Length: 113
Length: 112
Image (cartoon, rainbow over all chains, first blue to last red; front, side, top):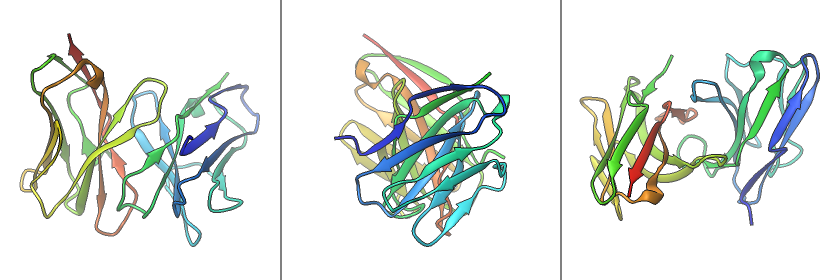
């Protein structure tokens, strides 16, 4: 039974489109995250969210927005997609923010053409 | 700015020998360090961690060493096995519970 699942696994779309990536965790964790792995393979934090607080990395364009319908879900919406948004996006969750290991989903490879 | 650095993009070792993966950090506020392992087409999985009050933590074949004065940590795998072939990420978080920062990863290949 997958702990952190994200869909779709692959997403190919054109510039200017709006798309969403879904993430669900069944671990009962309080905090969820979105990370971006760029072409240089760095894993960079985009957002962290628990039921009290959304922390946004200041480098993330406001075209990206997280939406959390409940504690087990953190979806990523991207508006007006650009070529530079092509990357692998990982959802993750943890018991405590910053102080416990992250459990990652298997990633969504986004390709913008 | 890369606060966590893994300067070796790849490492190749023979099965049965020791693998040593290195990581340096610049933020003196970091006090919790982790290693993750990643196979292709999967997300990173947690391997082992260490807090700054310790200088060593061991779990089976995996040992993490922390040198706070040098702002350096390393992961030792003994003995290395072909199934250990993966990308290893070093990560750190700080005492203010800010979000975890990752290095760029080191690809380990263990040859039979």
